[in-house]
Length: 231
Image 1 (cartoon, one colour):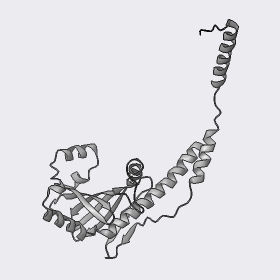
Image 2 (cartoon, rainbow, N blue to C red):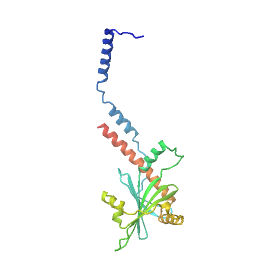
Image 3 (cartoon, one colour):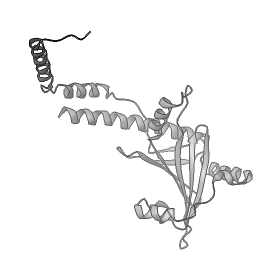
Image 4 (cartoon, rainbow, N blue to C red):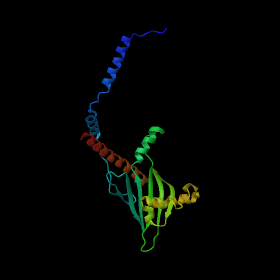
């Protein structure tokens, strides 16, 4: 049944709507900033983490760690005969692993994230440009797996992080997929990097370094954001 609504009731109802809208459009107070800053700074606890500038493995291999506060990338380096070896890796492995775990995969107890490594081997020579060998690998305790190997005609081209350097590298033949190599060659390459210290012990060390670095950077981030909001 259709019911008529008196004009007086309609006017009153409309007035209430307008009054309600007028009230809801009032500016909100700015009290959330101090509350957020206080909550952030409360979580900025002092954690214990160990990031050595250098360490020796049980086999006597001396590794040096280059790590700077605020930088996501770290570099391990050592010498092996006439070779200079460096391994670049990134603390973002922790957050990427956590994002993946939240979406698709429930990590087993004690499972650690795979850490991508860019291993660069240079040879010290007096006059001859020997180039550089880059080995893309993944550290996932207890193993370090090789993914790809590229040889560069010069160290500068290999290490150049500029846009021009990246463009020049893209034009080079980067080599076959590692899995396309005969198994005998794959095994020999794995022995090659193991001989240079990329073994089970280093894989564990890399995981420990990434976790300590992630905690260190997280603590500083929380403090910096909290202090900024609190200004």
